[in-house]
Length: 423
Image (cartoon, rainbow, N blue to C red; front, side, top):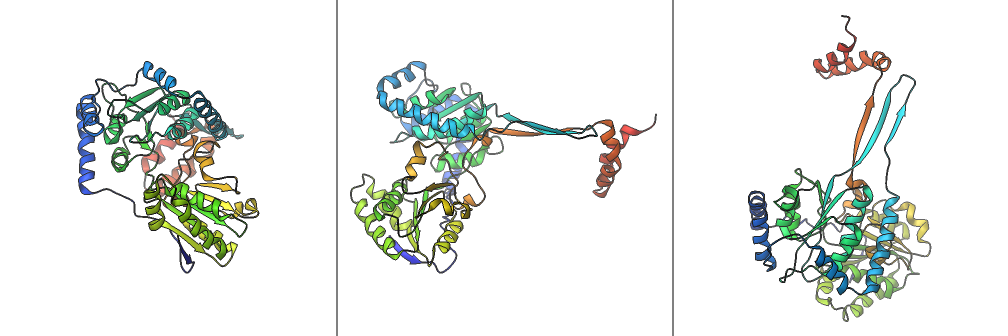
């Protein structure tokens, strides 16, 4: 990894992949086709892109039962324990409706209502992502969403990985459909003969999924357009280079555009970590991916002080931040911009990916400056409540009417005054 001094404003922001003109046109065509032709279009695209010749999209109960038979009992237990951890954390986020009153009889409040339905997209391909199922489904379930629909592409034999099916069933998914890509997003947004539309779509995917989510936003809500993964490690001389390197590589193996950053005032740690990264890379199964990510987006920023290191972190606004210093808790209050913060050497980033409980769906590409992890609120609506008594309106009618006329809206003013006209 290259070691560079901090000489100017730091950023790890990468260009958002908005797709080629051909990709955007292809997505728009798929969305239009699914909207017009429903299941037939989805089945056609599933055969074309996934190689699966299906006669129906919905996963059957016996397929879920078979998935349990194919899974090791110990792994199922681990999934269940992870679910409990994630659920316990997200239950703390639940907010209740509230009201307040005053002596004039005014009642003001906020009503919290869960969405009626949510669609969860889970990527497929060569890998299985049960953790993605849990992190997207459990906040929705905790919020009280009654209907949670999952879409994920099948393999060429029409199968979905057993781990994904088990995770979905354990987390409380209502319906599972064998479809991926832009056609899945279209089906969730607009509905087909067998898939009723949802109110919100969440979950990561490839460029076609991302472009489709952008296109359907407004007809339905979406979570975010996530970029490649990123990790920043804020470390002092007490950190161990082998552990820092391992954590940097844990993100680099995700994607060739993943970003791994070390920020430290210790030149010795910087040099040792750079060597250790190359050493550990050699034995990684995904070496080619990780090497490309490290070469293109890996960097060690050498600062003059711990305080400058903190300033660099806040400028970067990383998705994942590890603080590996002598007293990490003492620095927490100074961190303003980070998606998830991992404190101390035993809080390695994968702990949050799978098991601790906080959500691993995090803002990327510097958006932690103004965005939050996926949470229960993402599946809730807030409605304002206003109830004025006659006395309350009478006391404020002139002020309200004056404000309306200030903006040139006479009908607004008269709507209030009409209540007090003498008959």
